[in-house]
Length: 413
Image (cartoon, helix red, strand yellow):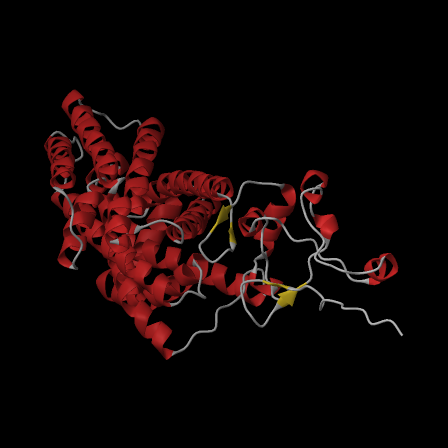
């Protein structure tokens, strides 16, 4: 009776000792297959043919050339990443061996979101001003815009076009602050729009990066000297534009300034809320902020100007066709929510500082559009001040561009 000295089946151990995988030689290319050896030794031809074959690379380092995916655990890879891998798109590998989403896809998404954000904001500003010109009651209009946003989100949630997040008491408490700051920013901007030209309000609101740096510094962030120097042209440009503005009004000026404070604080604390409640995306977060803001604003609106609404309505419908007035109000309400919805989708993926810079560049487009639509008179010094403020914003964006990399280097150290 013949005794064969068979080696045990050759198994290879990957990342975890408890998981062993048999490697099939057919997975290797033909050139590499010629450079591997058969671990079966001392066998007769018949026994060697019956023995399981496992082809092992000559060098252990060759395994680094092949992707290693944990079997039976594909559920942790999002579908979009799997689709990117199948299409051959360039991907990033993290230290854990997971395949990251391609940067080009993220950049395209942000470009679309920013484009919608800018367009929707232009439509909102035009029709918002049209309504305020014939119905100068910003508290009611601002409340109606929040109401439109609340109804919009309830429709999305009820129809399941947008999954409704599971919320609890801690979530509502975390949003009380951002909702309050959003309310302050929104009503202050509406008051400013009702008193001065749209272009002037947005020139003053282009100083938002100044408030971003100041308030971020108060909560512990630090900035190099070049960042602080970059905001000086913004301050100077806004000041020059203010003193040369034809429609200058202190109420409009202070409304825009207070709006800056409110929205900067909203952005900073909203980013913290997104970080804490990762299961809530930007759209759902803004939806709940809108609902809470409506509860904040409407009772105060009734107290401030509720007694004047009926008389103001009759004057408004006497100046334009009633259906036209309704259409303007409805468009301003819908597009107010849509442009904020787009901005919060962008805020999901960028920092509050980058958001403020993008918001400021958006104001350039809005200023130009409003001047063309309403034909507001613009003095040379006013245009110069606006240009200086925008140029300061460009310097600011350049000065803050390398800040995340510096922070990342510090964390590595």
